[in-house]
Image 1 (tube, rainbow, N blue to C red):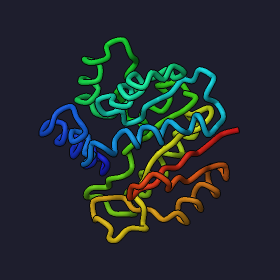
Image 2: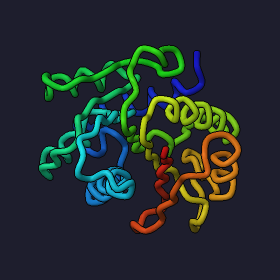
Image 3: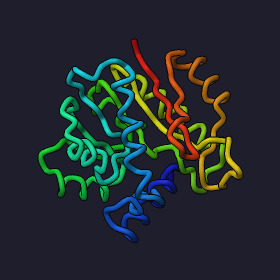
Image 4: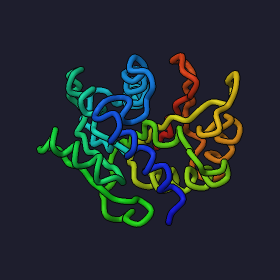
Length: 210
């Protein structure tokens, strides 16, 4: 059994318990959800790419709430696809959005099964580590973003829990800016942005390709 299956099982339990809403993907406050979506998608604006059409992969899409945010806000320049490792989440997404593309796969096993995308959005993929140790989660996280860097043409964004908090929760993945920056510079790129400006106990990172 892969150790990251514990994370998948947790989210599937949330979906079963709460249904298709913010609690079903374990976001505690509904009012913070749209804030995260806006920050995640701002990678396109930051990269001075707002007026062009882009392919985008919503990695760890859950029940496709990001797609609904895009539709509600009439964002026209994104060709959306979703991916989740859990068939339960993909089934809900396909039922709601049968005309959109969704993938159900484990990227570690099926990296070559999907094409590259201009942008990859990873909202909430790394915020919880559940029963994994910090080292286990760090290994999972760094291997994952190394693959994602190869699968994007222009950049990807992800969020992660801050270490600048009153206390750290054992089930969350708190990463220092220094540790993250060292990994990115040593292994991927020096071309990245850290955003701490949206009032939550996390931060979002844009990793960009030029």
